[in-house]
Image 1 (cartoon, one colour):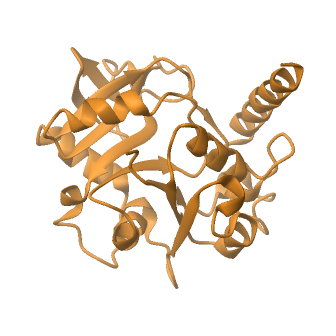
Image 2 (cartoon, rainbow, N blue to C red; image 1 turned 90 degrees about the vertical axis):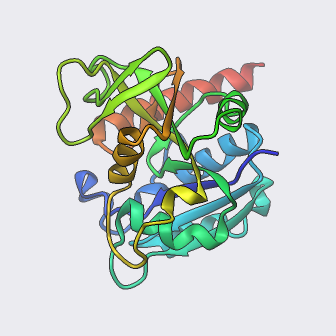
Length: 239
């Protein structure tokens, strides 16, 4: 059975101001549909049945649109930051009661059109706390931040990348609940810190994907994603 997926959609999206002052990034129109709709449809196609959306600023708009997920053939729950932003790590920690022992984690601004089932199979065949999908990037679409060799993540550093980093965190991870056993509840922190710790402890598997990622975290990324999804929609209509 496919694990549930947590979508981290609680950021302020300041890089997209002023268009995100009154609407959350997840609700931006991308080729005729709010982006969160595109993500939910993709998850359904990949076999995911349950989704937990970690929301923050203007997150009620996401809930008003997606509801309980029935319109997408999914079960959708919500975990809200509350009075203060919790960061990606704190938000995931708060959502834990809604997730199982193993779950996907993906960012709310990423469209990741890759096959999920082989990733799950690989992860469950190993006794590790986490798995990070990586893409050979060579600073092409964003700064590379991973040293990946022989199907292993040797080093990961999001803030201080080095010249030998040719791969990038693709944006889709698998975690066991035990990976968050020592995390403090109610504290704001970045999930990248946990990923780095798991890598240092030898508890983070690496899985290389070949399909490029699309993201709407910047105006350039938003335009590229719109063009890509519009092309997919046009192609589907011709079939």
